[in-house]
Length: 83
Image 1 (tube, rainbow, N blue to C red):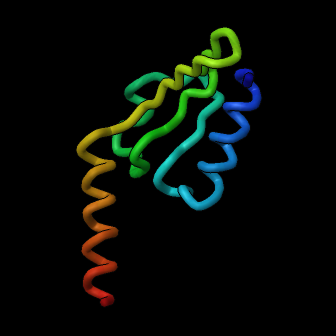
Image 2 (image 1 turned 90 degrees about the horizontal axis):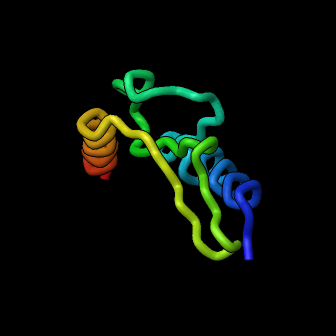
């Protein structure tokens, strides 16, 4: 079984670790416009994480679909260019 705090802690660690710059983690009550042109692919809305019966987890995440995709494509192009 798990709980909201455990799930959020794992997501926060992931966002600050290997996925830094790709996955975000947010504890402030922001809205969609706040994520416009955010370069990360997905930003976890920690305030909205739900855990039911310790076994079902629902995670909400925000993203600027085109901007995040464009940033990942640019990163890939840089890596290919360096190869």
